[in-house]
Image 1 (spheres, rainbow, N blue to C red):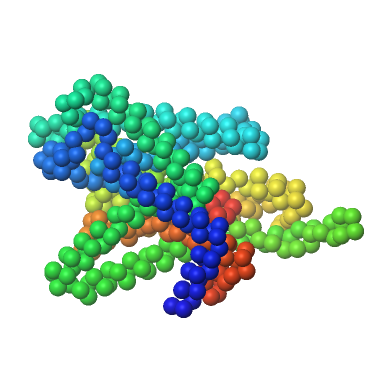
Image 2 (cartoon, rainbow, N blue to C red):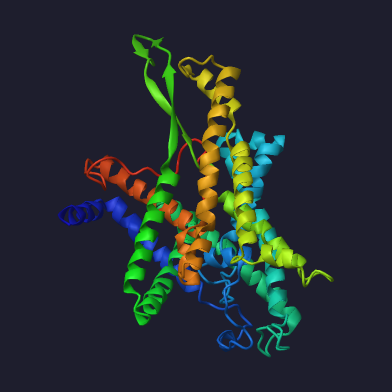
Length: 454
């Protein structure tokens, strides 16, 4: 306890770090307030009527959007689409930098190239938000099976004006969210986009945990609650191990004489992450798992038991297919983000080599073989983490609290917390203070091929 209090004193004794933490808190407060502001033309009272608007969280990919937005999606907030359009645009641009030479050139053009890529990403974000916003608002005008419309409009605006105004508000809300994320990165602590996603996820944790405690308490199942919490902690520790696990390849640098000094001749390590793809495979898999439910709406498909088993998150078929897709997407995303040839070329240019392996193609083949070996257990573990909430639900855990037993939510929470704590620890060490732990140092996700969430 004394160590904890001493660490807090050290953190707030550093003026720059103290200012950044205050900025972080203030910007997050602004973001959370925005998630409760309803789109103009929407009657907030209708949102509370379960017969008209059930206010139930969507499943599948839409549930992921609602999770990332901190519930703003279901609240029809000005931040309803949250940061997801920006993430989608970033993924598209990242894939283009692999496949399109023009984007590859921009990526290699230094700061000027990065500015161009960032500008293209923002324009693409606006376009994606506009399309998703129109679809989102049209969905509000549909019915819920009772014949009552979900067009949450007041009499002040007509449908056409509501669609225009609502789309503009959603675009502005998403771009403002992106701006908040960039301000957090510049003036706060940690990666701003990732922190906004994490805050949206954590915002749902207290209510779901309290609901689980009440349910178990009323049922006289206190010991079962304790077991659930212990299992939850074990899963968190396992995810931390997955996020931080690396395969270190020794790299030797040749000795060179520069003037009167000798440089090089040291051994370093090339860290290759076991989970180089991050949460991207889960996002891709959940986006595809949205398709079976859409096919059920086609004529003649309504009673398909096969499609129903693939569209329900509580069905075994859904989870088996999700697991397979995550393993496949992990290999795919790792292959397009980790370039063994580029790593080998950089090592050779800097005078580095892997002991026992010839520079050039042999080094590239060696790194590629190592990545293939470590990606298999990483992808299997990632798939198991993604579908673990299914087993938690089968074990009697509340549906909402079970989502924190794995999946995208837990991976992002653990990864962002580790990254932020690592940055705080770097501030402490730079000022000659002790780190956050008595032994060892906190490792974030940043490494060769580390996939960030934002």
